[in-house]
Amino acid sequence: MPQTLEKIHEFTGHKDGIYSLVAADNEDSFFSAAGDGMVIKWNIKTAEAGLVVARLSVAIYSLAFLQNQNILFSGTRFGGLYRLDLNTQKQTNYTELEGDVFSLLLLNETELIAATGNGIIYKINTEDGSIIHQTKLSEKACRVLVKHPKENKIASGWSDNFIRIIDADSLELKAEILAHANSVFSLGYSPNGKYIFSGGRDAILNIFEEEILEKSNSLIAHLYTINDIQWQPNTKIFATASRDKTIKLWEAETLNLLQMITASTHSINKLLWVDNYLIAAGDDRKIGVYVLQ
Image (cartoon, rainbow, N blue to C red; front, side):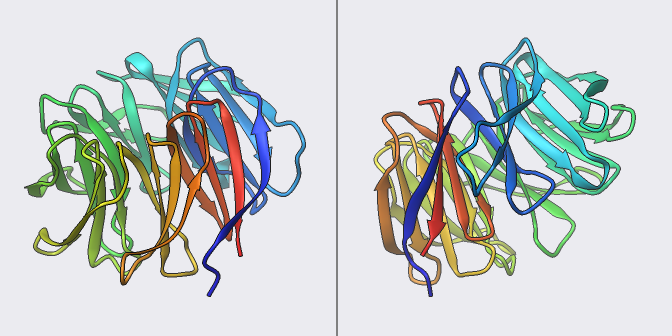
């Protein structure tokens, strides 16, 4: 089993910290979005300059890509949700939400979930941008959303230190747990859906049995905030990214640390696996591409 990462590319082009990464329309490309309001498309396997596909006048915190329709959604500071048709390079809809849009999650071709800094979770129609349903679950921000790999529910991480499980159809609260001593910044389901991995501002990685939300393991994984957790799709390996400037590669069953990379001079905010490639980006405005060896 491959167990180490080797850096092969470093991309530059953004003029502010990078907050979102999402896979694009083929196995070789991805999008990045940043505080400079730009969305850039990159090719993983070449060192070529990226293509700017959107320029907004406000920081972008989250992205979602509807691949079959070539539609890109951008969630921004102050609550703007933009819908961009990449076929025509035109903005087709704009929806005003309450609070910074920290996380976007596509449920299907017609439904998008958005989480905001005002503690509201929205279900939005992808065609016209209309709000189908919304629920307010806290006075604090919802920082992250992840879909259960097999069941119709969503795990959400909050700045009041809770993980909340919600029904993906109704947005009804199904369960909640006080998960960390500080904000929950990152979540990841195990591929079989039995465990939720969570990372917080307390630098602790917690593992919960999903069905009963009971903690099964915990460790101090980083020095500072764990900003992201991402599973490699073909192995039992996951990666974490932190404000402590490192990426760490873990063996999921044992929680053995396989590799630590000091990957930046600043906070690493986001990770993305595309096949055996790990993409990392953060406050230094750079994007590192690593291959799993």
